[in-house]
Image (tube, rainbow, N blue to C red):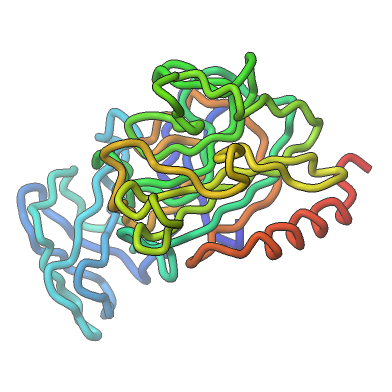
Length: 304
């Protein structure tokens, strides 16, 4: 994953992984439970709002939802920083600290594109094997605060694709979305994907960029295909061969620019899957770009 370090993993059986990007700060930090002051062992330069995660707190988190603490004001080569909220974890005089902010990832209602290649034979019916843009704090922050590519045959949120799955879908928080249409929770046009290796794509536009008739609802597009041959097929909205409406309550989007792999936005890690490669872009690629990506994936020779 681009050389990033995996951190914040809390598993009991060793089978799950929750991934978020971040960079470790130099030296150590001193934090006191109930205080908003952090003292670093070496000078730090941090942007206002930079979210910090203190490793000393991991042991006290009972889920994957270990909180981050935004910096109240920008610091320049300073050994202290003030947090916007009081630190609630375990007091530590020498904890490792991460800046879990990302750079260049779409936020708010900004457009973006996501693709991934996954093992088509590895999946399950639970939440959630995702890859993409998610809450930066690892907590369910409400509808529209994430936009990630989902792989599996989960129906627990009341919607599914056609047949018994698996499907490429969108996890946009508080539910998986396969293209809810005509009042039916089973979206038959989002057909099951039955290849050994699967390419999946999701593209979301800013509401103002959506086709006529979709500017109030916002819009997204889902694609899937065989990573070993052929081209991509539109799974939503296949009726138009293009973008379709987001469900009610999901426009404008409220993305915060975290990146996840192998879990839901709140750290739900009951999903099963094998991920090979992917990318998250700022701005939605053209269909021609999608086709080029698929051609390159096929040329890579998965399974050979």
